[in-house]
Amino acid sequence: SLSLDCFDQPNSPEVSEVLHQVSRACALHGKTAGIPAPPIKIQDYEKLGFSFFNVISDFQCMSQGLSNCSKNLEALPQG
Image (cartoon, rainbow, N blue to C red):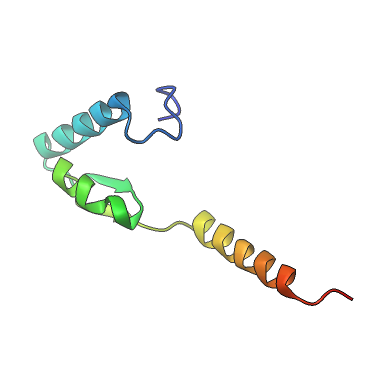
């Protein structure tokens, strides 16, 4: 999406067209189409022909963990 000038716009027509192209190309060549996806988007991507999903990444784990640590630290009594 970044090279399409559609960063952080996963539902843009440009991104949608590329996803369709990838899915068709994979099917044509007998390959499994895969994509990183949040759990809520998996059914949408399955409808497009994708069947392999990277649901969570190291970055997401670290980011969520650091966010939880920050919240826990903020909840500590000051003194």
